[in-house]
Amino acid sequence: MKSSRISGFYKKTIEERKALITEMHPFTEEDLAVFESVAPLAEDTADNMIENVVGTFQLPLGLGLNFLINGKEYTIPMAIEEASVVASASHIAKIVRDAGGFVTESTERVMIGQIQVVGCSDYTEAKEAVLENKQILIDAANDAFPSIVTRGGGAEDLDVRILNEAADSKFGKMLIVHLYVNTVDAMGANLVNTMAESIAPLVEEITQGKVYLRILSNLADRSLARARCIIPPHLLGTGDFSGEAVRDGVIHAYEFAASDPYRAVTHNKGIMNGIDPIVIATGNDWRAVEAGAHAYAVKDGQYTSMTTWYKDEQGNLVGELELPMSIGIVGGATRVHPMAKLALKLLEVNSAKELAEVIVAVGLAQNLGALKALATEGIQKGHMTLHSRSVAMAAGAAGEMVDIIAQELIKNNDIRVGKAKELVEKYKR
Ligand code: MEV
Image (cartoon, rainbow, N blue to C red; front, side, top):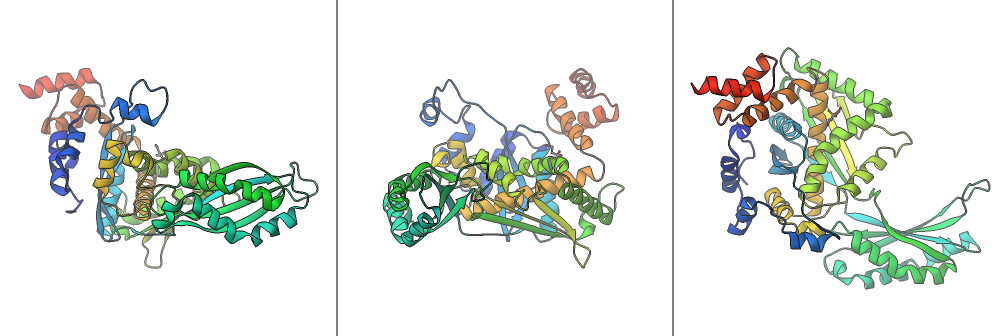
Protein backbone atom coordinates (compact mmCIF):
# COMPACT_ATOMS: atom_id res chain seq x y z
CA MET A 1 0.00 0.00 0.00
CA LYS A 2 1.08 3.58 -0.61
CA SER A 3 1.76 5.79 2.40
CA SER A 4 -1.25 6.20 4.69
CA ARG A 5 -0.05 9.71 5.48
CA ILE A 6 -2.58 11.88 3.63
CA SER A 7 -2.89 15.51 4.61
CA GLY A 8 -6.15 17.41 4.33
CA PHE A 9 -8.18 14.21 3.75
CA TYR A 10 -10.96 15.63 5.93
CA LYS A 11 -11.29 18.65 3.65
CA LYS A 12 -12.06 16.54 0.58
CA THR A 13 -15.51 15.47 -0.54
CA ILE A 14 -16.61 11.88 0.01
CA GLU A 15 -16.16 11.24 -3.73
CA GLU A 16 -12.61 12.62 -3.66
CA ARG A 17 -11.77 10.49 -0.63
CA LYS A 18 -13.11 7.36 -2.32
CA ALA A 19 -11.04 8.16 -5.40
CA LEU A 20 -7.93 8.57 -3.24
CA ILE A 21 -8.28 5.26 -1.41
CA THR A 22 -9.08 3.52 -4.68
CA GLU A 23 -5.68 4.70 -5.89
CA MET A 24 -4.07 3.34 -2.71
CA HIS A 25 -5.69 -0.10 -2.70
CA PRO A 26 -6.18 -2.75 -5.39
CA PHE A 27 -10.00 -2.68 -5.36
CA THR A 28 -12.04 -4.61 -7.94
CA GLU A 29 -15.14 -3.29 -9.74
CA GLU A 30 -17.19 -5.39 -7.35
CA ASP A 31 -15.55 -3.72 -4.31
CA LEU A 32 -16.22 -0.30 -5.74
CA ALA A 33 -19.87 -1.22 -6.29
CA VAL A 34 -20.12 -1.90 -2.54
CA PHE A 35 -18.89 1.63 -1.87
CA GLU A 36 -21.40 3.09 -4.30
CA SER A 37 -24.31 1.05 -3.02
CA VAL A 38 -26.93 2.83 -0.92
CA ALA A 39 -27.35 -0.21 1.33
CA PRO A 40 -24.33 -2.52 0.94
CA LEU A 41 -25.89 -5.18 3.17
CA ALA A 42 -28.75 -6.63 1.14
CA GLU A 43 -31.88 -7.52 3.10
CA ASP A 44 -31.78 -11.17 2.05
CA THR A 45 -28.16 -11.46 3.29
CA ALA A 46 -29.22 -9.80 6.55
CA ASP A 47 -32.16 -12.20 6.75
CA ASN A 48 -29.74 -15.11 6.67
CA MET A 49 -27.57 -13.60 9.40
CA ILE A 50 -30.08 -13.08 12.22
CA GLU A 51 -33.76 -13.68 12.95
CA ASN A 52 -36.87 -11.52 12.53
CA VAL A 53 -35.10 -9.13 10.13
CA VAL A 54 -37.05 -6.05 9.07
CA GLY A 55 -34.16 -3.99 7.69
CA THR A 56 -30.52 -3.07 8.13
CA PHE A 57 -28.81 -0.44 10.27
CA GLN A 58 -26.01 1.80 9.04
CA LEU A 59 -23.13 3.58 10.76
CA PRO A 60 -20.68 6.08 9.29
CA LEU A 61 -17.48 4.39 8.08
CA GLY A 62 -14.46 6.68 8.48
CA LEU A 63 -10.78 6.06 7.80
CA GLY A 64 -8.10 6.23 10.47
CA LEU A 65 -5.07 7.57 8.61
CA ASN A 66 -1.32 7.85 9.14
CA PHE A 67 -0.93 4.50 10.89
CA LEU A 68 2.54 2.98 10.65
CA ILE A 69 2.72 -0.31 12.54
CA ASN A 70 5.86 -2.47 12.52
CA GLY A 71 7.00 -0.45 9.49
CA LYS A 72 3.81 -1.24 7.50
CA GLU A 73 1.27 1.34 6.31
CA TYR A 74 -2.37 0.83 7.31
CA THR A 75 -5.64 2.51 6.44
CA ILE A 76 -8.00 1.78 9.34
CA PRO A 77 -11.73 1.30 8.62
CA MET A 78 -13.71 2.63 11.59
CA ALA A 79 -17.49 2.21 11.92
CA ILE A 80 -18.68 4.56 14.66
CA GLU A 81 -21.39 7.12 15.43
CA GLU A 82 -19.25 9.41 17.65
CA ALA A 83 -17.59 12.56 16.26
CA SER A 84 -13.88 13.26 16.95
CA VAL A 85 -12.82 9.62 17.36
CA VAL A 86 -11.49 9.09 13.81
CA ALA A 87 -9.85 12.54 13.74
CA SER A 88 -8.17 11.96 17.09
CA ALA A 89 -6.84 8.49 16.14
CA SER A 90 -5.41 9.90 12.89
CA HIS A 91 -3.86 12.86 14.71
CA ILE A 92 -2.04 10.61 17.19
CA ALA A 93 -1.05 8.15 14.46
CA LYS A 94 0.69 11.01 12.70
CA ILE A 95 2.67 11.90 15.85
CA VAL A 96 3.59 8.25 16.49
CA ARG A 97 4.57 7.78 12.83
CA ASP A 98 7.00 10.71 13.19
CA ALA A 99 8.40 8.88 16.23
CA GLY A 100 8.97 5.69 14.19
CA GLY A 101 5.51 4.11 14.39
CA PHE A 102 3.84 1.55 16.64
CA VAL A 103 5.54 -1.71 17.51
CA THR A 104 3.26 -4.67 18.13
CA GLU A 105 3.41 -8.39 18.89
CA SER A 106 1.00 -11.14 19.87
CA THR A 107 0.76 -14.62 21.30
CA GLU A 108 -0.54 -17.61 19.35
CA ARG A 109 -4.31 -17.43 18.92
CA VAL A 110 -5.43 -19.95 21.53
CA MET A 111 -9.05 -19.81 22.68
CA ILE A 112 -10.47 -21.57 25.73
CA GLY A 113 -13.45 -23.95 25.73
CA GLN A 114 -14.96 -24.57 29.18
CA ILE A 115 -16.73 -27.76 30.24
CA GLN A 116 -18.52 -27.70 33.61
CA VAL A 117 -18.83 -31.02 35.48
CA VAL A 118 -20.81 -31.45 38.71
CA GLY A 119 -21.89 -34.44 40.83
CA CYS A 120 -18.51 -36.21 40.95
CA SER A 121 -18.16 -38.49 43.98
CA ASP A 122 -14.46 -37.57 44.33
CA TYR A 123 -13.36 -34.37 42.55
CA THR A 124 -9.63 -34.94 43.01
CA GLU A 125 -9.90 -38.40 41.46
CA ALA A 126 -12.08 -37.04 38.66
CA LYS A 127 -9.50 -34.34 37.94
CA GLU A 128 -6.69 -36.91 37.79
CA ALA A 129 -8.75 -39.11 35.51
CA VAL A 130 -9.30 -36.23 33.06
CA LEU A 131 -5.58 -35.43 33.06
CA GLU A 132 -4.71 -39.10 32.48
CA ASN A 133 -6.99 -39.08 29.44
CA LYS A 134 -5.80 -35.71 28.18
CA GLN A 135 -4.54 -36.92 24.80
CA ILE A 136 -7.68 -39.00 24.15
CA LEU A 137 -9.84 -35.93 24.82
CA ILE A 138 -7.67 -33.65 22.66
CA ASP A 139 -7.79 -36.16 19.79
CA ALA A 140 -11.57 -36.50 20.15
CA ALA A 141 -11.93 -32.70 20.05
CA ASN A 142 -9.88 -32.50 16.87
CA ASP A 143 -11.89 -35.34 15.29
CA ALA A 144 -14.97 -33.18 15.83
CA PHE A 145 -13.51 -30.31 13.75
CA PRO A 146 -10.79 -31.73 11.46
CA SER A 147 -10.68 -28.71 9.13
CA ILE A 148 -9.00 -26.53 11.78
CA VAL A 149 -6.24 -29.15 12.13
CA THR A 150 -5.70 -29.00 8.34
CA ARG A 151 -5.33 -25.21 8.70
CA GLY A 152 -2.51 -25.67 11.24
CA GLY A 153 -4.56 -25.28 14.43
CA GLY A 154 -6.85 -27.37 16.61
CA ALA A 155 -7.06 -28.48 20.23
CA GLU A 156 -3.54 -28.40 21.69
CA ASP A 157 -3.81 -28.75 25.43
CA LEU A 158 -6.17 -29.28 28.32
CA ASP A 159 -6.32 -28.29 31.96
CA VAL A 160 -8.62 -28.96 34.90
CA ARG A 161 -9.62 -26.82 37.89
CA ILE A 162 -11.81 -27.60 40.88
CA LEU A 163 -13.97 -24.63 41.95
CA ASN A 164 -15.45 -23.97 45.40
CA GLU A 165 -13.18 -26.40 47.26
CA ALA A 166 -13.30 -24.47 50.56
CA ALA A 167 -15.58 -26.07 53.17
CA ASP A 168 -17.39 -22.73 53.74
CA SER A 169 -17.87 -22.07 50.02
CA LYS A 170 -21.23 -20.53 49.12
CA PHE A 171 -21.57 -22.80 46.07
CA GLY A 172 -21.12 -26.49 45.42
CA LYS A 173 -17.92 -28.01 44.06
CA MET A 174 -17.50 -28.27 40.34
CA LEU A 175 -14.84 -29.48 37.95
CA ILE A 176 -13.98 -27.17 35.08
CA VAL A 177 -12.15 -28.57 32.07
CA HIS A 178 -10.35 -26.01 29.92
CA LEU A 179 -9.72 -27.09 26.35
CA TYR A 180 -7.10 -24.92 24.64
CA VAL A 181 -7.71 -24.55 20.93
CA ASN A 182 -5.52 -22.77 18.38
CA THR A 183 -8.12 -21.15 16.15
CA VAL A 184 -5.56 -19.70 13.65
CA ASP A 185 -7.43 -17.07 11.59
CA ALA A 186 -10.93 -17.72 12.96
CA MET A 187 -12.41 -16.06 16.03
CA GLY A 188 -13.21 -19.64 16.94
CA ALA A 189 -16.47 -19.50 18.92
CA ASN A 190 -18.15 -22.01 16.63
CA LEU A 191 -15.32 -24.46 16.46
CA VAL A 192 -14.51 -24.32 20.18
CA ASN A 193 -18.18 -24.80 21.11
CA THR A 194 -18.47 -27.73 18.69
CA MET A 195 -15.40 -29.36 20.25
CA ALA A 196 -16.58 -28.75 23.82
CA GLU A 197 -20.02 -30.20 23.07
CA SER A 198 -18.63 -33.22 21.27
CA ILE A 199 -16.22 -34.31 24.02
CA ALA A 200 -18.73 -33.74 26.84
CA PRO A 201 -20.04 -37.37 26.86
CA LEU A 202 -16.44 -38.61 27.10
CA VAL A 203 -15.79 -36.21 29.98
CA GLU A 204 -18.90 -37.56 31.77
CA GLU A 205 -17.68 -41.11 31.28
CA ILE A 206 -14.20 -40.29 32.60
CA THR A 207 -15.34 -38.23 35.61
CA GLN A 208 -18.53 -40.15 36.40
CA GLY A 209 -20.07 -36.69 36.81
CA LYS A 210 -22.69 -34.68 34.93
CA VAL A 211 -21.73 -32.07 32.35
CA TYR A 212 -23.77 -28.87 32.19
CA LEU A 213 -22.13 -25.96 30.31
CA ARG A 214 -19.92 -26.44 27.24
CA ILE A 215 -18.91 -23.03 25.95
CA LEU A 216 -16.09 -20.73 24.86
CA SER A 217 -14.62 -18.33 27.45
CA ASN A 218 -14.40 -14.72 26.32
CA LEU A 219 -11.53 -14.11 28.72
CA ALA A 220 -9.17 -14.93 25.87
CA ASP A 221 -5.96 -14.51 27.86
CA ARG A 222 -4.09 -16.92 25.58
CA SER A 223 -4.88 -14.74 22.58
CA LEU A 224 -3.13 -11.55 23.63
CA ALA A 225 -2.02 -8.67 21.41
CA ARG A 226 0.35 -5.90 22.51
CA ALA A 227 1.18 -2.46 21.14
CA ARG A 228 3.77 0.05 22.23
CA CYS A 229 4.85 3.53 21.17
CA ILE A 230 7.76 5.72 22.27
CA ILE A 231 7.30 9.43 21.64
CA PRO A 232 9.93 12.14 22.14
CA PRO A 233 8.35 15.14 23.90
CA HIS A 234 9.09 17.59 21.06
CA LEU A 235 6.38 15.80 19.01
CA LEU A 236 3.76 16.31 21.70
CA GLY A 237 3.61 20.10 22.13
CA THR A 238 0.30 21.79 21.36
CA GLY A 239 -0.86 25.42 21.59
CA ASP A 240 0.65 26.91 24.73
CA PHE A 241 1.59 23.49 26.13
CA SER A 242 5.18 22.29 25.78
CA GLY A 243 5.85 18.67 24.81
CA GLU A 244 7.12 17.98 28.34
CA ALA A 245 3.93 19.43 29.84
CA VAL A 246 1.77 17.23 27.59
CA ARG A 247 3.87 14.16 28.42
CA ASP A 248 3.58 14.80 32.17
CA GLY A 249 -0.15 15.51 31.85
CA VAL A 250 -0.68 12.20 30.05
CA ILE A 251 1.24 10.34 32.77
CA HIS A 252 -0.81 12.04 35.51
CA ALA A 253 -3.98 11.13 33.63
CA TYR A 254 -2.84 7.50 33.40
CA GLU A 255 -1.97 7.38 37.10
CA PHE A 256 -5.46 8.66 37.91
CA ALA A 257 -7.04 5.83 35.87
CA ALA A 258 -4.60 3.29 37.31
CA SER A 259 -5.67 4.23 40.87
CA ASP A 260 -9.41 4.82 40.52
CA PRO A 261 -12.01 2.52 38.93
CA TYR A 262 -14.40 5.47 38.40
CA ARG A 263 -11.83 7.09 36.12
CA ALA A 264 -10.51 3.78 34.72
CA VAL A 265 -13.92 2.94 33.23
CA THR A 266 -14.01 6.20 31.24
CA HIS A 267 -10.33 5.95 30.33
CA ASN A 268 -10.92 2.41 29.05
CA LYS A 269 -14.10 3.48 27.24
CA GLY A 270 -11.85 5.87 25.34
CA ILE A 271 -9.58 2.94 24.39
CA MET A 272 -12.58 0.94 23.20
CA ASN A 273 -13.56 4.01 21.11
CA GLY A 274 -10.62 3.01 18.90
CA ILE A 275 -11.05 -0.75 19.16
CA ASP A 276 -14.78 -1.30 18.64
CA PRO A 277 -15.02 0.62 15.34
CA ILE A 278 -12.52 -1.72 13.63
CA VAL A 279 -14.00 -4.78 15.27
CA ILE A 280 -17.41 -3.70 13.97
CA ALA A 281 -16.15 -2.67 10.51
CA THR A 282 -14.47 -6.06 10.02
CA GLY A 283 -17.65 -7.92 10.99
CA ASN A 284 -16.27 -9.21 14.27
CA ASP A 285 -18.06 -9.75 17.59
CA TRP A 286 -17.47 -6.51 19.51
CA ARG A 287 -19.31 -7.75 22.61
CA ALA A 288 -16.79 -10.57 22.92
CA VAL A 289 -13.88 -8.14 22.59
CA GLU A 290 -15.44 -5.69 25.06
CA ALA A 291 -16.17 -8.41 27.65
CA GLY A 292 -12.66 -9.84 27.36
CA ALA A 293 -10.96 -6.45 27.53
CA HIS A 294 -12.79 -5.30 30.68
CA ALA A 295 -12.28 -8.65 32.43
CA TYR A 296 -8.57 -8.45 31.59
CA ALA A 297 -8.46 -4.95 33.12
CA VAL A 298 -9.31 -6.48 36.50
CA LYS A 299 -6.86 -9.40 36.30
CA ASP A 300 -4.78 -8.16 39.26
CA GLY A 301 -7.80 -7.82 41.55
CA GLN A 302 -8.81 -4.17 40.96
CA TYR A 303 -10.38 -2.72 37.84
CA THR A 304 -7.69 -0.48 36.38
CA SER A 305 -6.32 1.20 33.26
CA MET A 306 -5.87 -1.08 30.24
CA THR A 307 -2.93 1.05 29.08
CA THR A 308 0.31 2.06 30.83
CA TRP A 309 2.04 5.42 30.25
CA TYR A 310 5.44 6.38 31.65
CA LYS A 311 8.58 8.39 30.97
CA ASP A 312 11.73 6.51 29.91
CA GLU A 313 15.33 7.48 30.77
CA GLN A 314 15.56 9.74 27.73
CA GLY A 315 12.42 11.61 28.77
CA ASN A 316 10.27 10.01 26.03
CA LEU A 317 6.62 9.20 26.64
CA VAL A 318 6.14 5.42 26.46
CA GLY A 319 2.68 3.87 26.03
CA GLU A 320 1.74 0.19 26.17
CA LEU A 321 -1.46 -1.76 25.73
CA GLU A 322 -2.01 -5.52 26.05
CA LEU A 323 -5.46 -7.02 25.55
CA PRO A 324 -7.12 -10.32 24.76
CA MET A 325 -8.31 -10.07 21.18
CA SER A 326 -10.87 -12.65 20.10
CA ILE A 327 -11.29 -11.65 16.48
CA GLY A 328 -10.94 -13.42 13.14
CA ILE A 329 -10.52 -12.80 9.44
CA VAL A 330 -12.40 -15.91 8.31
CA GLY A 331 -15.87 -17.16 9.22
CA GLY A 332 -18.91 -15.38 10.60
CA ALA A 333 -19.85 -11.97 9.28
CA THR A 334 -16.25 -11.22 8.23
CA ARG A 335 -16.85 -13.05 4.96
CA VAL A 336 -20.59 -12.41 4.58
CA HIS A 337 -21.06 -8.69 5.15
CA PRO A 338 -19.90 -6.86 1.98
CA MET A 339 -18.59 -3.87 3.99
CA ALA A 340 -16.67 -6.18 6.33
CA LYS A 341 -15.03 -7.86 3.33
CA LEU A 342 -14.08 -4.45 1.98
CA ALA A 343 -12.77 -3.34 5.39
CA LEU A 344 -10.48 -6.38 5.52
CA LYS A 345 -9.22 -5.58 2.03
CA LEU A 346 -8.56 -2.01 3.08
CA LEU A 347 -6.54 -3.21 6.06
CA GLU A 348 -4.47 -5.61 3.94
CA VAL A 349 -3.90 -7.90 6.92
CA ASN A 350 -2.70 -11.43 6.26
CA SER A 351 -3.75 -13.08 9.50
CA ALA A 352 -5.99 -12.69 12.53
CA LYS A 353 -2.81 -12.15 14.59
CA GLU A 354 -1.96 -9.15 12.42
CA LEU A 355 -5.51 -7.76 12.70
CA ALA A 356 -5.40 -8.18 16.50
CA GLU A 357 -2.14 -6.22 16.64
CA VAL A 358 -3.50 -3.41 14.45
CA ILE A 359 -6.58 -3.18 16.69
CA VAL A 360 -4.57 -2.72 19.90
CA ALA A 361 -2.33 -0.13 18.21
CA VAL A 362 -5.44 1.89 17.33
CA GLY A 363 -6.72 1.47 20.92
CA LEU A 364 -3.43 2.84 22.23
CA ALA A 365 -3.57 5.79 19.81
CA GLN A 366 -7.16 6.54 20.79
CA ASN A 367 -6.25 6.57 24.47
CA LEU A 368 -3.39 8.99 23.90
CA GLY A 369 -5.68 11.22 21.82
CA ALA A 370 -8.14 11.47 24.70
CA LEU A 371 -5.50 11.93 27.43
CA LYS A 372 -3.58 14.54 25.42
CA ALA A 373 -6.76 16.58 24.94
CA LEU A 374 -7.98 16.08 28.51
CA ALA A 375 -4.63 17.05 30.04
CA THR A 376 -4.40 20.23 27.92
CA GLU A 377 -7.24 22.20 26.39
CA GLY A 378 -10.02 19.68 27.25
CA ILE A 379 -12.02 17.72 24.70
CA GLN A 380 -14.80 20.20 24.00
CA LYS A 381 -12.76 22.53 21.77
CA GLY A 382 -11.99 19.74 19.28
CA HIS A 383 -15.58 18.51 19.47
CA MET A 384 -16.83 22.03 18.77
CA THR A 385 -14.56 22.42 15.74
CA LEU A 386 -15.94 19.21 14.26
CA HIS A 387 -19.48 20.09 15.26
CA SER A 388 -19.16 23.52 13.60
CA ARG A 389 -18.01 21.83 10.37
CA SER A 390 -21.13 19.64 10.27
CA VAL A 391 -23.30 22.67 11.05
CA ALA A 392 -21.62 24.56 8.19
CA MET A 393 -22.29 21.65 5.81
CA ALA A 394 -25.88 21.33 7.01
CA ALA A 395 -26.29 25.04 6.08
CA GLY A 396 -25.13 24.33 2.53
CA ALA A 397 -21.39 25.10 2.74
CA ALA A 398 -19.15 22.99 0.51
CA GLY A 399 -15.46 22.71 -0.33
CA GLU A 400 -13.20 25.35 1.20
CA MET A 401 -16.28 27.25 2.40
CA VAL A 402 -16.83 24.60 5.12
CA ASP A 403 -13.69 25.57 7.02
CA ILE A 404 -14.25 29.30 6.63
CA ILE A 405 -17.84 29.15 7.90
CA ALA A 406 -16.86 26.75 10.71
CA GLN A 407 -14.15 29.13 11.91
CA GLU A 408 -16.59 32.07 11.80
CA LEU A 409 -19.14 30.12 13.86
CA ILE A 410 -16.51 29.33 16.51
CA LYS A 411 -15.26 32.92 16.54
CA ASN A 412 -18.81 34.20 17.10
CA ASN A 413 -19.44 31.50 19.69
CA ASP A 414 -22.73 30.77 17.92
CA ILE A 415 -22.76 27.31 16.36
CA ARG A 416 -26.26 27.08 14.89
CA VAL A 417 -27.49 26.16 11.42
CA GLY A 418 -29.41 29.48 11.24
CA LYS A 419 -26.24 31.49 11.83
CA ALA A 420 -24.31 29.28 9.40
CA LYS A 421 -26.95 29.89 6.69
CA GLU A 422 -26.54 33.65 7.17
CA LEU A 423 -22.77 33.30 6.77
CA VAL A 424 -23.10 31.06 3.71
CA GLU A 425 -25.33 33.71 2.05
CA LYS A 426 -22.83 36.44 2.95
CA TYR A 427 -19.91 34.38 1.63
CA LYS A 428 -21.69 33.66 -1.68
CA ARG A 429 -22.26 37.37 -2.31
C1 MEV B 1 -15.33 9.91 25.10
O1 MEV B 1 -16.01 9.09 24.19
C2 MEV B 1 -14.07 9.24 25.59
C3 MEV B 1 -13.30 9.97 26.68
O2 MEV B 1 -14.16 10.24 27.78
C4 MEV B 1 -12.17 9.08 27.12
C5 MEV B 1 -11.43 9.55 28.34
O3 MEV B 1 -12.00 10.25 29.18
O4 MEV B 1 -10.24 9.14 28.47
C6 MEV B 1 -12.80 11.30 26.20
